Image: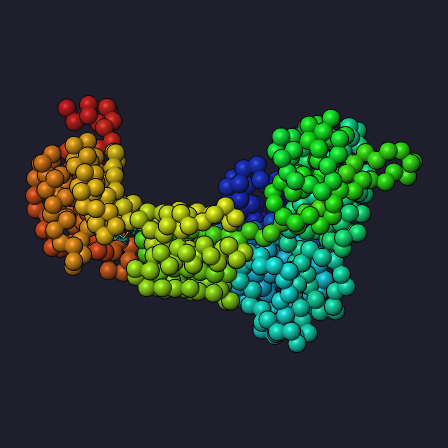
Length: 566
Ligand code: SAH
């Protein structure tokens, strides 16, 4: 919940706008300001104060308990010109909140956290627990001082401008192992461990947790690296296991007994076979997702000497790389989606055609490895992107428009095995960008057809054009014409003309949303194909399409409009 506090009439107006914009997310605190801030501080995860920063600092001072528990606080000035992230920039989410408040109220977010200001991901923003000399390492990274990166494995981290130098006094480790930390060492805890647990009916949360704690400690492993608990389906509701997962703050994954029974384990036994139908629960559940068994099955020890009620085993799973397939949109920066932007900055390796890389190079974080190649190297790009992800990196494979439309997504995913995570980010494809410029040509059924016969035999293309012609579907031609391919477009238009009149509207859009954008509306009979090139899409209307007020409109076919036209 976000607590809202204001003192003046102007503050109350801005406060009410925020409350109206975010129904269910905010709570208004009225009454004397000191009292309102105190109550909100205790009850909310975040506060927006429509008060001067000085006043808020004084009111908050006696309430502060620590970074981990204090709410994030944003201050908005009387004129709603600034949203200042005052407290809890990262942990409390105040930096992000300042941006969101800025979006609603039209004020500028003010963020003073060093890492955000310098565009370097703070160690605490990676979403993984971090321990040790966080401030010292962050400082060194910011100052560009040498930092040694010591990672047990390649994890899909965002780019970190760290200098790999063993002499550096400052060390950033990525490890699930506990051990003595150097005075200038911070350690990121990757989500590498899976703990398999079994429990008899009624086992207590404390018994399960104590067992897990002993197993990890005995093997020198950090509880902060536990990614999940795993057990058999029959124990999905077992309070001791459910409670232990909740206390560790990790999800509980369950597997069918038949699945677990098929997994080879070092310590099978008869008891679980009889009870739940698999000779191993803890070891098999831990190993079910793959990985290396670090702690074989062990049983809980009970102070009262009664038989153990819980078992556990620990597996380290291999890091999974991450491949984001990102569409950049047709060209204009404001048609690049915020999600695409975030993925570009999330990746430590960027793979793409050089001209597309140029389009977004300024958005990349320092330290990003850019692997660019020229036209025609599709296969190499697809292979490279997948290979980098398989090494464990966070990779972004980019394409213009939508990366899945006549672009890199399919060749890349055809190469990819199931050992990497894949994230798709849709982009505004050329057909949509062009349609918005032309009017509403795609208002009814439509199809895209690429006229490039480089990889598709012309007979196949022609069959599809003919089918679209016969079915009276609006057609957008991609790759319509190049210097070496000049007869395909007239041929395709000829096929459509067998089923549509010469006055059928045709929209021609070149370089949609780019600096030299141009568009024209003509007809099937009048289009001169020599005016079309590879930077262009050609949209041919169906038999109902019309030019209305200079715009291309394919009627949706609503009865109320048909009636009106009569
Ligand atoms: N993935 C891209 C399409 C790649 S195929 C997308 O989703 O848009 C390349 C063809 O797309 C070009 O020959 C052209 O026909 C079309 N195209 C791409 N961007 C365009 C733009 N900004 N304006 C007009 N046509 C474009």
